[in-house]
Image 1 (cartoon, helix red, strand yellow):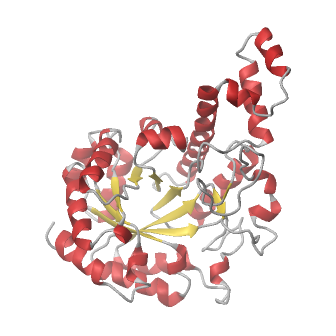
Image 2 (image 1 turned 30 degrees about the vertical axis):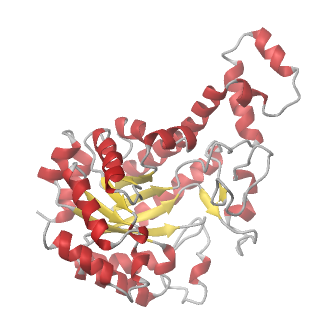
Image 3 (image 1 turned 60 degrees about the vertical axis):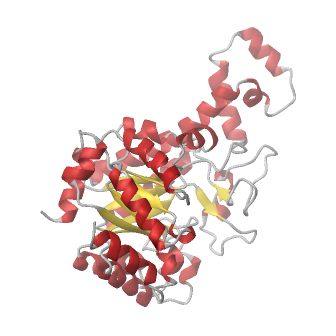
Length: 384
């Protein structure tokens, strides 16, 4: 049975344990995340697929939306600025898909959900979210938008409580899923950057409205006498955190349901913070609930740690919580030698992971250095 067929059956029809899914239903997933800067020319796209096939990778998770822009023919967002100078008809996703299909390699469209920009200089396109919808961006406790990397944020994020943004992002996912024959769509940055966000006026008002329906009139009157715009989050910190988790969860479910309604065979997956306590309390990313509610078909915990022992703890927790869905262990290849990556892959699969995903293809320096892939392939593909 073809790999894609078995993969689909395991992801969409899994009712048994994750360990059983990995060992009896699903051939090992051997994947790489592919960042947008590695697919900016037709030759780079061809080299990627050629090397993936040569070294036994059967899945590519390709970044097609990095910073509120597109590395495909988008109906909603401007073309990625990294493609400046390339012919107008160059379509990185389309190019990779065409060649990967011939090679029998699955392609998942990696879409950054909330992370939208990372420079003080605004995007060049007036159609970019940052320029067209600045009201969609998260704000910190001081009511400021953070545009570049800070102590606890990578840059500008969109606020998931905004229903207009939720609808927009849903349409971005649908645009990819319906216009391209992708095997999956992949959430990344489906979260808040840190507890310092989002304190925009809309979030504060929504939360206040919710809490006012629950508290006594005397308490409402007491709170109304304060001048602090953060009165309600400070008065109800646990409820405020729950409110923020609900915004992310609502966005995940909205996208998942919409994609499944039009292309039920598409696998919906997410890259998540692997330490659930951190994901839950600081990123407001409740991925265990998403799995329990069957709003994900596959999980990619970003277990980017140097310690194999720590990776084992993270993967084991993900497998145990996966509700029978495949877990693909994220391997931080950029920070460990290939021998340790092999050790981590073997440990993850021993614990029930359905496979692994290297972060990222960039270790090959645009395909000019294949030593890492060769060593992993020899050890894991040829000697599983």
